[in-house]
Amino acid sequence: MLRLSTKGQYGVRAMFEIARGYPDRPLTIKEIAERQDVSVAYLEQILGKLRRAGLVRSIRGPGGGYLLAREPREIPIAAVLGVLEGPVAITSCVDPREGCIRIEHCVTHLLWKELGAQIEGFLNTITLGNLLAGDVGSPHKVRTVLKRASKDQNSQ
Amino acid sequence: MLRLSTKGQYGVRAMFEIARGYPDRPLTIKEIAERQDVSVAYLEQILGKLRRAGLVRSIRGPGGGYLLAREPREIPIAAVLGVLEGPVAITSCVDPREGCIRIEHCVTHLLWKELGAQIEGFLNTITLGNLLAGDVGSPHKVRTVLKRASKDQNSQ
DNA sequence: AAAATAGCCTACTGTTTATGTCAAGTATTC
DNA sequence: GAATACTTGACATAAACAGTAGGCTATTTT
Ligand code: FES
Ligand code: FES
Image (tube, rainbow over the protein chains, first blue to last red):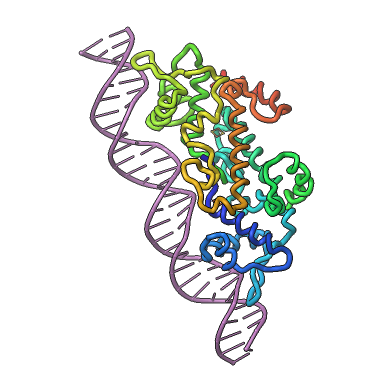
C-alpha cells in the first residue's frame, strides 16, 4: 500500500546524483541515466519538471548538463516529490485539488489528514544533504537539520 | 502522491461502522453500505477479505451480519489496511514480496524503508477504539474534535 | 560556417491497476 | 420452505503508469 510512482523514485535518485557534483560540475542526462539505471528519454521528462519548478538549472551545449539551483541541504525530499507527484493526498477527500461532500460526518477524514501531515513532516526533515551524508532515520540527527530545512518549506 | 485505494478507505469506514455495534449487534452488509455510501457488492469483497483474515466474523441467515472478532481498541488501522492493501511498501525495492538488486549501492533505500516504518508506526498506534472516541492526531486538537465527532456518530 | 554536443518538448502507446458490477451459489433462521 | 444474508468467482470499464519516439532549439568547438 501507499506506493510511490517511479517518477518520484527516479527523481530523487537523479537529484542525489546531481547533488554529488554540486556545485562544480554539471551532470549530463546521459551520465545520470547510466549511474542510476534509468532511460535517458524518461529522465528528460522528470528533469524537465524539476527544472520548471526551479529545483535544478540546466546548461545547454557541450560541457552542459544539470546543476542544483540551491544547496543540497536546502532541498528537502518533500520538495522533489511534491513537484513530481503533487501534494501528499492519502485519499481524494484530503486532496486540496479535490475535496469531499461527506467531510462533515466522516470519522476517517481526520485520520487521513493526520497521516498525511506525518508523512509530509518526515519528508521535509530529510534533505539531499542528509542523503549525501548517508544520515537518514535517527531522530536526533534529524532535529538539527530541521531548522535549516524549515526555510525551504516556504519556497515549495 | 501516496494515495490509498478505495478498498482500504471503505474497509476502514466499514470496520468503524461495525465497531459501533460492538459487541451486541451484528450489522448487515446492507446497513453498512447505506451508512457509508458504498455499494453492497463491493463491500462483500472487502468484508470477505477481512473475515478470512480473522478481523471480523459473520453470522448467516436472518438476524445475521458482521461483528468484530476482537475489541475495537485491539484492532489498529494498520491491521485493516494490511489485509486490504498488503504491507506498506513505498517502492518495490522495500516490498517484502519483491526486492531489488541495486539495494547495496542505493542511497534512497534506507529513506523509503524509514518512511515506511514511520507510516506503519503511526497506523499501529491508532485503533478502531480511537476512531470511536474521535481521538486521532495531535493531543491539543483532539479535545475539540472529540465533541463534534461524538455528535456525528449519533446523528448518522 | 558547419559539425558536434546537449538540453527541450510533446504526442503516442502498451500494460497494469483500480474500481466496481453481475450472477449464481450456500448457510441459517423462523 | 420461504426469506434472509453471507460467499464466490468471473467479467467490464476506466484511469494511471511507465516508458518510447521523433523532432526541435541552444551552445560550443573546429
Ligand atoms: S469520505 Fe470524504 S472525508 Fe471521509
Ligand atoms: S533502486 Fe532498489 S533499493 Fe534503490
